[in-house]
Length: 295
Image 1 (cartoon, rainbow, N blue to C red):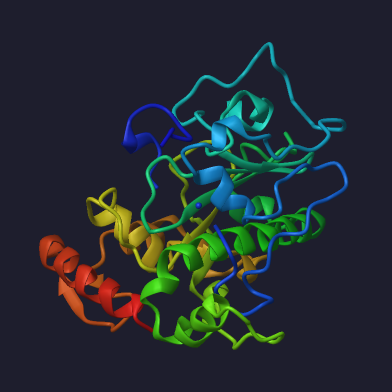
Image 2 (image 1 turned 135 degrees about the vertical axis):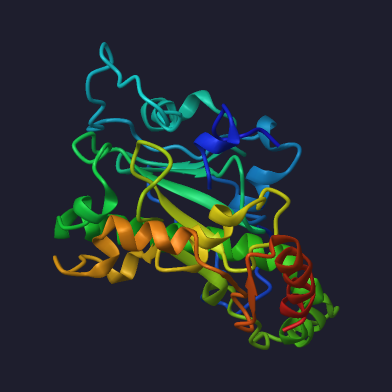
């Protein structure tokens, strides 16, 4: 699978088919008039398939995009997201999943969970702001929340494709769909939108503002050390719904957030504490992943 961002992993720390969940959470994403798509299969599944490069890319009009200065692009650590913002059509459709004149949705090159996407705003006035400050702008925040809702539907559909075959909650729905005479009203299934988290890192490792759209399982061979885990499982990860933050919110404090990254490991699912034993945590997360799939 092509990576969304090149370069070393340290600089960037950080797939959906037939709807198998309830009709609303995993329904195919409505597209705007200026977008093109293939409707028979879920859009993200098409994009993530091995043949996706041969299919038409999802695209939208490029008019009105704030491109900033192309002659003087910033040259400091972590600018690998800029080219996706400026020229999303340069990349294969299984790397740039969706774009319009407001945002670009890409695969995270180093996913820390089963599904991990990044939502990038195209407003150049926000690119280099810390998200804690950028989301003080209520209009910008509202736009990003709206775009994130669409991204969550895509992510949840892909998670459904991957997890539904193992899920107890999806058995009745799957059986009904496979029936020669399926009922008009399908049984409800697992709501995978509840397993998708949306938020930012208090101190992002990449320069350009980005929002994580990530499944909660933390099951990935790219999750390799303390910061990878704690950056998503402490207050270092700030949900988009929590913005704007109050000026005295402790999550704005650098010392508090640095401490979060170094805190002991705590399982996201059962709460068990593992101290600083990363290998034990990883073994436990593998067990939790298998149980979580069965829900």
